[in-house]
Length: 174
Image (cartoon, rainbow, N blue to C red; front, side, top):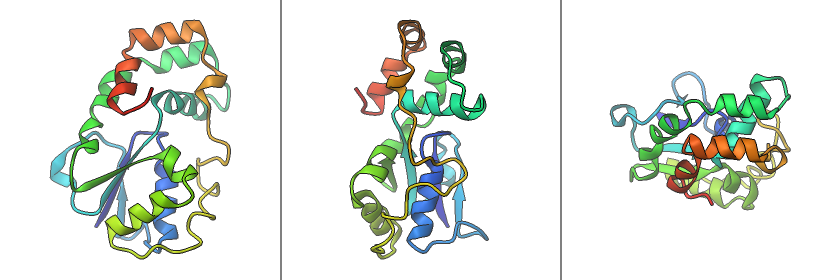
């Protein structure tokens, strides 16, 4: 079975859509989407993990949970378990049987990440997959959240207190 995983609001719907655009049904036992921290026991070859800039994950989660209203207080409140949550997913990046991809690459690299996914799961790359990726899922917007639109000094101070810079560095973001 194909196993997909990702941090909530980290691109999981875009990943599921990308895999379906490669001809893999995501129902009836063909695929699984989890959003759970790393546990090697239930992973296997062909697994794919997706992640996204941690600040954008935070903004996107607040947008979804608060019906598109993003305030400084909502962002700060949503940081309460930032570090332990993200660190629970960190082993996905170093497991050689799991392909780890960034949402930013999946939606912005002209199809190279979908090609990597296709190769990893043993499926042919289909020419129209990348062009049909944007939108049309439960929560994948054509215009992704941008943390820069919401980041104020008070939010940044809370981010530092909750060890956000350590999370960013661990996942390879500046």
